[in-house]
Length: 295
Ligand code: SF4
Ligand code: SF4
Image (cartoon, rainbow, N blue to C red; front, side, top):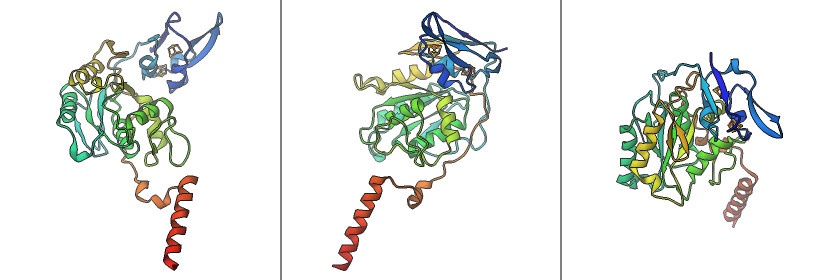
């Protein structure tokens, strides 16, 4: 039987486990003036291990489960793109930010992607945009429940800010508006309207981001040695320290794959609801065009 053990000496009452547990098994309870996490319905735990991986204090231990690996469906990966496919049973995928034009991809970036596959990643490729690019990653990741980590590397793209958008997506999710705006993202258009909320929420629970990108240490995310070490750490059976992370193969997310292509509503932009600002700009363009016509 699955057991959820919480080390009260380490627990700071941050509430991360309360947020990430899909079965709502945690509650914060006050004890001696301190908030501590308690597992209130341990028998309902299905050993997804999201709490264990995401607890910043490493205070949770899940025991009494068998590590799960699943066959991805035949249609996997549902989306095409600039990525390589490696070991389908690996718990890790690599996302390298593309901060140049796609016809100018530096050979070092290609080598980084190849290094990840050689080190055992399930998928490894580039991310260019903070909207459709992220939607394609979500579609391919939730189609393979074995993928539990995304290693984020290379350098942030200052135009699209896709790394910031991806990190905020996993941390905060999306607003319940028609554009599904990523909460907290600073990117200019961080919208995910072409993929289901179910897939977005599954993605957020299924993966943990291992972020190698750092403004203070730009070389870190570009060094193949770091990428290889990150991928290697994610596939270890035993908890392995890597930077501030505690990485190991948690097994597959214990729910069926969601294997669907994104539905490109963006190809019909007239069907997208415009923001107030966009509507005003459109109105100004129409007015200017009509004046020109009758001059
Ligand atoms: S995530 Fe960890 S530190 Fe935070 S409340 Fe839960 S057990 Fe405590
Ligand atoms: S392993 Fe998953 S289901 Fe079990 S307590 Fe942790 S987050 Fe909840």
